[in-house]
Length: 142
Length: 146
Image (tube, rainbow over all chains, first blue to last red; front, side):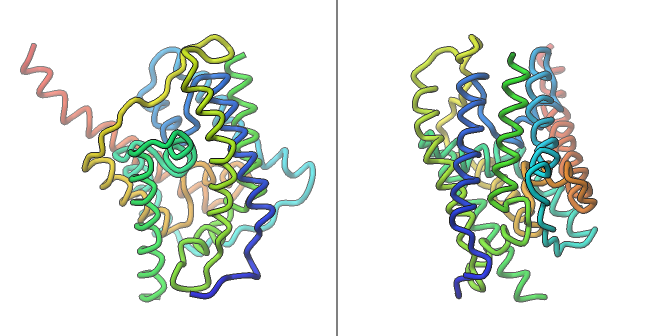
């Protein structure tokens, strides 16, 4: 392992992370909900009355974020190596996996760990290790 | 008010994801590439978020109602079961393959990235498939009880 000093952005990472924390704080203190994106999306699919408005609003905020960010600075181009087939397989895996696992990086990783939830600690460890193993194998096979 | 609060929360969340570089799959995979050229950034993102979240959820846990007057709906389960672990592993595999997870994928889709749109569509399909499968599995049992 070598540290990728060229890409490591400690201050932007910390600042962005603090903002994410503030956003999660807003949602839980104002709306009484966990800012877990997979759960917010999934809840839309099995929609009950009273459950739809705030979910659409939150997702709307996520979708509008780039437009707001662009008012300040141009967005850097993302590096997306995955081709069409990989994106489809990955998307399906994320959709199914987060449903069975009851959460993702925001739900378990940020909110769950903030609550010191044993479930979320285990889930986070599981998806981190799985992600790392996947990248390792991909690098070996490619 | 609820919808406005949720919208602003989503907006701030998205801006945080953009600022921290989490909407760049290259940065995410750089973090997951522990055996190669490792970019620790994601750890600091999560650390920063939990730093704030710890206090916010601590406060939330002590309240019965949100500041806007609604119910405080925090997950109550404490058990660790196969679904949790297996689901998380499958999610992790998908995450490692594309470098996208739900939040950043939506933000990236919002910024006009075609590849993010493909991922989001597949992700929604996966969630729908899960919802349908769960209904199918539990439906016959319900009918038998009736």
